Image 1 (cartoon, rainbow, N blue to C red):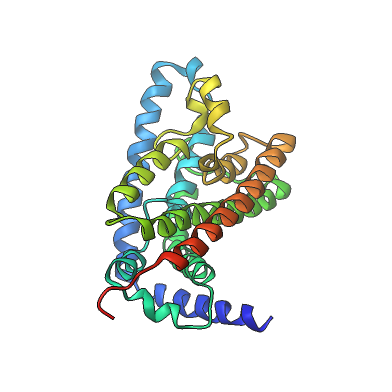
Image 2 (image 1 turned 60 degrees about the horizontal axis):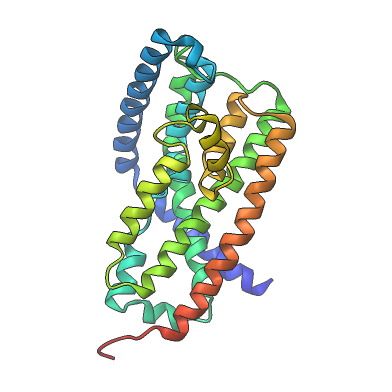
Length: 270
C-alpha cells in the first residue's frame, strides 16, 4: 500500500501539471473540430453515393468520430512523451534509476496522468457542441444506461491498452541508437489498425475479423463502437474480455523488457 502511494502522488502531480496547458488545449480543440467536420463530410459523400455499402448508420459514425476527437489524447499512439525518450538518449534516466521506484510503473502512471489531463481539457467543449449539431451530423445519446456503463469501462480498458502498448516503445528504445524510426513505424501501423483513419467496420469482413484480434483494435475501436451502438451484448462483452487479455500480455511483456533493459543500460560520461 505504501508503495502504491508513491505512484498515486506522482500521478496527481503530473495530472495537475497537465491541466496548466490551457492554450495548447484551445488550439487542439480548434484542430479537432476542423478534423471532425472534415471526416464527417467525407463519409457523408461516401454515404450519399453508395448508401448500401455503408456498414454503419450515419448517426453511429458521427458519434464515433466526435467521441474519437473528444478523447483523442486517451487513444492516440503517436502521442508519446519526448521527455522520456530524451532521458533515455541523454542519460538523465540515471536520476530516476536512483529513486526507490519501479521505472515501468512510474512511466505508466505518468502516461495515465498526462493523457487524462489533456483529454479532460479538450473533451467538454467538443462534446457540448457535437450534441447540439443537427442530425445526422451530431452525437447521439447512448441507447441505455447499460451501454453507457459498458462504454466507460471499455474506454478505461482501451486507455490502459494504449499506454501499455506505448510502454513497449519506451522500453525498446533502450536497445536503439535513436527511437525516431521505432516511433514512426509504430504510430503509422497503429493509426490504421486501431480504426483512427478508417473505422474497422469499413474494412473487408475477412480483414476486419483479423484486425479485431490484434491489440490495436482493443484501443479506440471497442469503446467508440459500444457507445455508438454498433456492437452490444455478447459481442461487446467478448471485445472487452479481449481488452483485458491484451492488457495482461502487454504489461507482462513490457515489464520483462524493462527488466532486461535495466540490466543492460549503460550511462556514458559518469
